[in-house]
Every structure is written in structure tokens, then in C-alpha cells.
Image 1 (cartoon, rainbow, N blue to C red):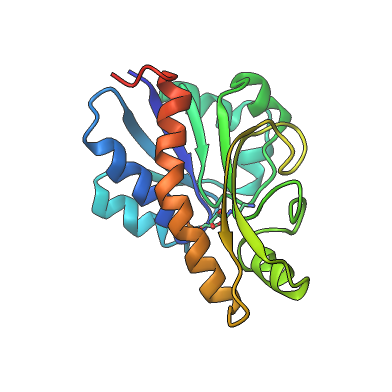
Image 2: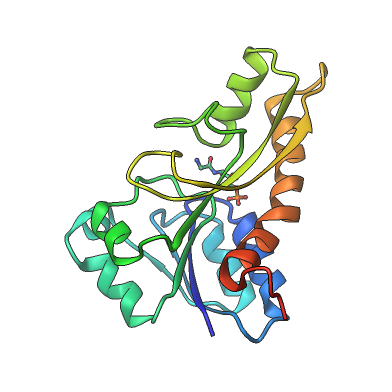
Length: 192
Ligand code: GAR
């Protein structure tokens, strides 16, 4: 049974969607949700979902071994980033090779990299007058938003869009595709 630890920095709507999707699948267990932000709404969502949650500091995250040990204690098989904004340290990448997955709210390689997250992405897409945006689900490597792509999905950008309305459309794609893309990564094409 794969153990999935979710890392989130903010609202955590993707974390909730993933937890609800897999709550009906007794092959998947989510023992812990981790956040770098003590005020993140994802912590309240974790409580409502009955999933233990923990906050870590920058020092803990980047100290050699600290987060890796915590994840190993949980017998984590996969690390799922759901709106997590810190760069993943090399020690964590080495401990979970090909086992850390991220979602980005744009069609990478466009609008990725340091500082490109959440509403900054949607503001940039609108500023550039792009006709389309979307999501990219990808493996995490040592560079921001540059790991191997697992799945991309597109949506239109409308002339009337604001960053909030575009974010809402992109979130709809995230909720539809992130859980199924994860399921595919965990179990391959054989879903039964
Ligand atoms: C999501 O749109 C996710 O793609 C984005 O943050 C949002 C988190 O929303 N991630 C990034 O920008 C990572 N670079 P949520 O907290 O409601 O799931």
C-alpha cells in the first residue's frame, strides 16, 4: 500500500481533493500532511479530513536529514506537492528519486521558475495576452518546475478574465486531473 505524504503551503484545496479521491481506495494511505506555513488553511483542512498535520521550519526543511527522517518514519513512498512553494532540497530528492510529484498552474516551460507561483502565474499569463493556460503535473528535480512532465491540460483564457477567474478555471483542471495522474503514477495503467 503506497503511503503518500502531501506538502502544501497555502489553502490546500488540491490536498483536500487528493485526500477525498483516495479515501475510497484502500490501497492508498495518507499518513501526514506537512506545511511550512503555520497559518496555512491546509492545516484546518487536514483536521477536518482526520489526517495528522505538522508544520516545519525553514531550518528543519534544509537541515541535512531532518525532513528525510520524518518522511522515512512515516514509511512514505511518494511525496506529493500541492501548492508547496519552497525548493525541494537535494537530500530529499536523493532519498525519494522519481517519487516526488508537483503540480504547476501553467503550461510549463512557460511561466515556471523561482517566484512563479499561484496568482503571480495567472497575472503574467494575462499580462502577456496568452489565449490559453492550463496545468502541468511533473516529477520534481533539482530545478524549479523543470522535471519530466507527466501530464498537461489546457483551458482558454478569456478576454474578461481576472487573475481570480483564471485561477478558478485552472483549479478546476487541477481537481480533475491531479488525483488521476497520481493514481497512474502509483499504479501504472493497471488501476485495479
Ligand atoms: C495551485 O494552483 C497549484 O497549482 C499552485 O498553487 C495553487 C495551490 O492551491 N502551485 C504552484 O504555483 C507551485 N509553483 P491550493 O492550495 O488551493 O491547492
